[in-house]
Length: 432
Image (cartoon, rainbow, N blue to C red; front, side, top):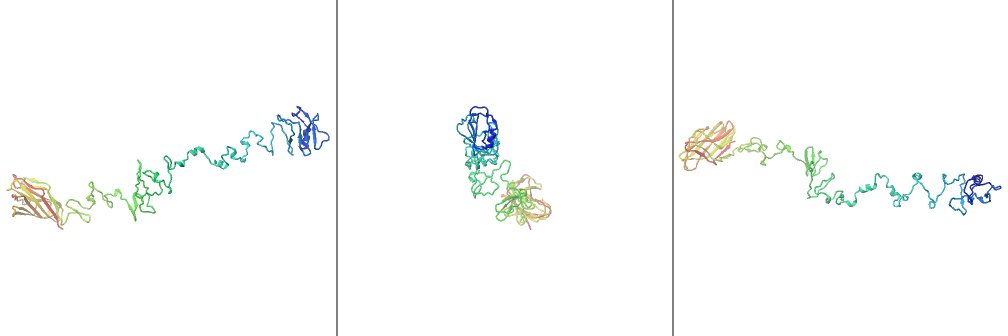
């Protein structure tokens, strides 16, 4: 201790607890001791301080630390600068002191007492299982870490039931983990050759939805797309367009089918289609020219009327104005009595000219011919023979109006009805 400090202490009256139980000790400077070594004693010559020449002070039996039982010499080193030594319970700032943590305890150290830049190793905070690098991984954590870990999918669930599907080497879900009815993503998908792909539709959407767009800028065979309302696909060398349903049965569209699975005659050609017309190569329904049209009576027609005349319904032809026709009817007939006969004639539209013959065979070698140039004329009857009877009506006609050319007949005696039999036939040929 420096001399100045010792002299200050000597010149003061200090209340202490001495080794001898004094409550107050008067300390005065010893005469003649101005420079160390100095000795300070009490009133009974007990040595209290010794100040050595190197500035150290020896305190002997003057200050008693409660319960310490000091019995040996202790050396106390004070700073060279002026300072204050305080008693227990009095605050004092310690500077440049080293505290051995192994032999001392510092209590009441809180967060405020730790410097921001203290750099305490994280191993001092727990069991040393976490190092500083691992501790820094907490940076950026926004919620409970355990909850985040619990919400992560375990790799053991890959391709496992109730787990998740893994991707193969082409970054696609392996086929073994797909449903039979597979919906593919918007990534390119390749279907294995020979495999059947099923697309499941929902209750409100179509099975496959192809987005509408313009024609793709680059096309490959097999591409399919919508352009406005047209479904299109790419063949090997050309683009094809699906026909619209609204184009069925219209001009420049496509033919429909009727209830019988046949194309309606109106979609085959112009004109009127009928049993007596045919479709020409120019797409027109026309009556045959040079080819006869044939009719056959499908059931018997009878009468007992002796008045002219009764239609032989079914043994007839439609004829058109201005055309030129050759006609021939082979009429099978009989009566109830072989001595009775039949009268045959024709009826039809107005004509430019009409000429025809009615021929009645009267035996196997003879007959009667009646030539006429009008309707319902010369109905002289033929006579029934013992064999099946046949009559021939043959002629030429050029109608001046369209209508029906039909065979008519009557009986020659009301008591003997006459019948034109089934399978009587007629021929009509348009002459070019």
